[in-house]
Image (cartoon, rainbow, N blue to C red; front, top):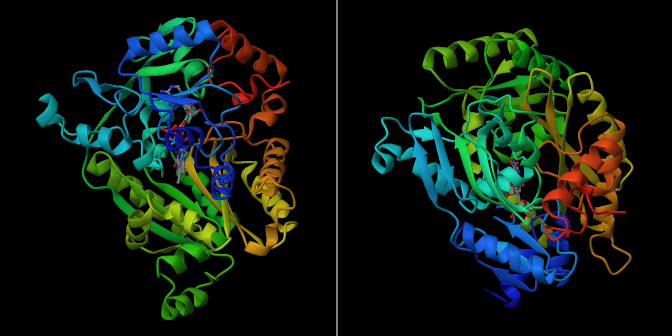
Length: 482
Ligand SMILES: Cc1cc2nc3c(=O)[nH]c(=O)nc-3n(C[C@H](O)[C@H](O)[C@H](O)COP(=O)(O)OP(=O)(O)OC[C@H]3O[C@@H](n4cnc5c(N)ncnc54)[C@H](O)[C@@H]3O)c2cc1C
């Protein structure tokens, strides 16, 4: 048990811009009264029983990298830190290609063990889980599952809900275990009902994940496409071509392309002049970064077909170098946001998913909303692609003087801006979130987005598993909001 202020604040704040702004002002808000470090499932069962007896609220925490205020503490209660002791690999099954792991394990520790499967588990191959979110170094398996996260190679490996085969969750109503079957027709899928429950149904204590054999180095490619419409068309063609799915697949709009070329020093004047002559002008050209992997013949063929589709759309191949440049900073660049705050520059991100027929419209609407805000830049990229649509990821950069906060809440303006975008996403037919989850940030929009019948179903599950509303209460998923 830890009850020092540092541990309590760290357990009650995530990494959303609202969290960062409040912390910088010394206003962490309400934080847990104590942080508990369970050692195993039996500890969890004991803690949950004790808290139920005394009516104490509980919030499970993983890496605390939530960007949706998922850990915000609404009142008195305790945090359960799963990373301290519950981070072990419990089983590796080479025959079924699965790994069973405790929820507090960080991404790099999981990947290191899978890579060393021959040495650690006597396996014949090296493996990967294929889940590499940008927060890879600072997020945990339990947090991934609780938020329905996506890694940057999810177009090929799938999102976490495709990777989780079975779960064990300790709930106030008892321990719930699902079976590690490749598939089942035993009624609705309990795993899918638990995935994304953001700590509101119980505490994940064990997860069985699918793993994949490691294959040769991915084949990296990049293309510069003439404009967003051509780029979207090519992306859709690639993902519907039936030749297989690329692994990394990230298409930046003109604004983000400009920034990427500049920050990765790919905007040499000679190259810029050549691109202009080829009709790939700044302000309209779009950069596609990607890779293919798997069996070498498959990866080669897919890369070739992608090249053909891009060239038909008027693209110029730019080779693997830009992908390598992006990879070098992919787990670090997002934290520039924290340094920029020293200069008063606010960087925030929101993401969604929509069908191919809605993507252009959604981006237009978000940009129009942004244009109405003084000195705010909107960068967009498409990633996590599917045959039916894709995720759009927005980065908002606001200059210092654009957002003076009038009242005592240093994040009031940020909150209002986020709310405006979220409302707009629902109105435009996009999801509220593709992989960050809901937390308290998007909770007020859940009922309008999903409708009352679906929300009542969620509330019924919540009531069944957590009748006293002790698990991460205070608006998570919009469950206990009026
Ligand atoms: C720089 C940066 C980049 C990011 N990039 C990505 C990205 O590429 N893809 C992506 O999907 N997300 C990304 N995120 C968001 C975040 O990393 C994910 O939501 C991640 O899955 C959260 O994991 P965590 O271990 O940090 O969980 P936490 O932040 O600690 O918790 C998140 C939620 O899960 C619940 N929870 C955690 N552990 C358990 C458990 N054992 N049982 C029940 N509930 C639990 C918590 O109560 C909370 O509601 C990014 C965040 C940052 C700061």
